[in-house]
View 1: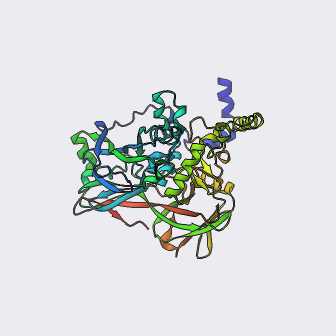
View 2 (view 1 turned 45 degrees about the vertical axis):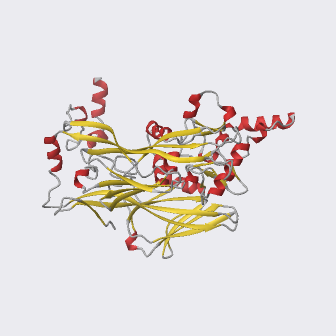
View 3 (view 1 turned 180 degrees about the horizontal axis):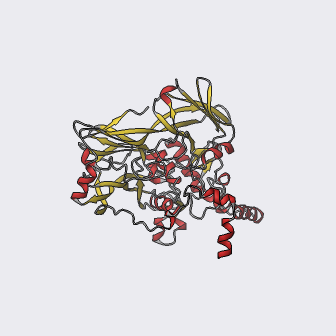
Length: 502
């Protein structure tokens, strides 16, 4: 030991490095962290929605949030039910992938009638697949029924299979319960706050006159669809129950007073959080590749853009895909379902053995139909320009991967998935992870400035995307601006107000 330590002292490099007492003794010092306030964690406090129990979906309703404690996590618990057709015991219904967000069009947090924050279904899916912690990611994906297997009644083995499979036939009433995480920017998360305790001013709903959560649901055909509108259609599709569930930190009263002392009415307190705004357009394709530009006019301070493209989701396409799921053509299993010649059977068996995972991807190449929630198109080029100046440009799918994968954790979306991203697209170049995050920041958390794009200083932003298409089909091109937002405690009333961030 002495030989080693004395030898180090002979090093001029070491001697230079420790000049001025530049030695880290703190690493060896025992230092007890400060204790937390006296906090009780109240879990799963539920409030039921009342106006969403209808057969058509495509509606909206809100419920009040209990005003006690500090909200640390918020989610929806939803139960839907429908009756499957009895015309064919082997008929399979088309149930959307990522069901937890398929039912959501938009969710907003309201202070009385004024919106403080909003989240869209697409960005819910983007945030869910972007979690760094794989265990945390899979917890929400599994609870959200992100990839229910679509099977005919003939494949049913035991009743417990209904937990992971959708079985149709013989007028079965199918009931599905799933959970939707509400990733508000002030709660802890990758593209949210890096410390939900410090941004919990928004979670202290005692500062709001009446805090409500508004849920706008998607049309029924985007959730579950049968093979037709007559005897093959599902019936009685409805929301049986929807609950808003909140996990709270409830400090002891004296500790709560100390926490709230920072909200002085003499000096307004502002909290930096985030929000999002959607800009979308529809384009009719005229060729096998389409280039379309979306003009972004908002003046927010942009943390980055989330870009995604999917075919316009209509009921006709959903029913058309349900027919192909039943026949097996949607995932290529039809050559195994229909008894072929021995040579054809051998070819089919070899084909499915070589690529067994593709059985879960349902698509129709001729009409570019893919299972909703797994219908996001591959983007082959993307650029962002303002007044002719290039702010960002990627001329290939691979360059987009280089830009986004350090923040967007695409891989391992499915349990046991060890495939590369290029191997998990369906026949239409679609999958459930084709979201493109174009960052103007160093870190993803919205409660810190690590670089942004001041849209107020630009005339407009033109976001141009190139994607595979089928002539005559319509597509939605969406640009979500994830931006910084300021929420302040009003000096006169003590109420939370939203400030313009630009």
